[in-house]
Length: 262
Ligand code: NAD
Image (tube, rainbow, N blue to C red; front, side):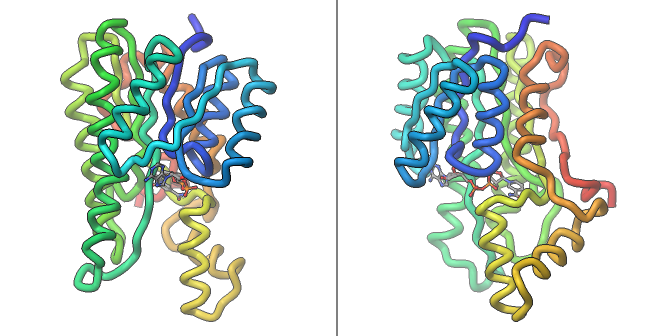
């Protein structure tokens, strides 16, 4: 099976958490990487250096804001200019906002929809013509268990993630005969910054310790009572990019400790 060496990937929101895990696992396969996301510039530079030295791949970084369509188009253009194309597009950047719908701030609704859903539309639109020219492409949208089911107080996130799963299916159909696949990964709980801040907010409200609240949070929804890791999600992304997955398209893949089995 021809490997992924020499392919180029854009991974949005890859300065931390799941996106970083996906970037590391793809780099380990010899894929050139365009990192994106916010964060401390020194930490991002050391991540770039680490991926280059560990895996001998080319690594670049763009601070493009995924809520801004023009910046998304620039990100894709920058990667195309640098690497001669975007073979693998991972739409991963995301934010959360927890509030009952009648108290949900309107600007937070707009931000969640823009970053978690519309950004994937803009990046796919920009990257697809190049993939069609090469007759090869892999689009991976990081949705969520909340792309398949709901939880209270997460209306914008649940709406965005269901939208991402729908967008994935629509794109997959449009490019099905052109060597391009589009799939969604649907993680359950992963202990990243996005989830740490939710545990902190819950601990503040309940008066319990972070560790105790963490245990309660994961056990509420997850039959295995444990978190998935960014590395495990990275390995699933690698599999979806490989030849063995060329007939896997238009589908959501759960990696959620059994959440969806309930
Ligand atoms: P995280 O907070 O660690 O990472 C989010 C990344 O997105 C960071 O790199 C951040 O800088 C970037 N980002 C945020 N806003 C951005 C913007 N406007 N423009 C560019 N980059 C931006 O969180 P994570 O848990 O790794 O989340 C990654 C994805 O996984 C999200 O789409 C999230 O919804 C999804 N997800 C997470 C979990 C979980 O339990 N952690 C579960 C299911 C799905």
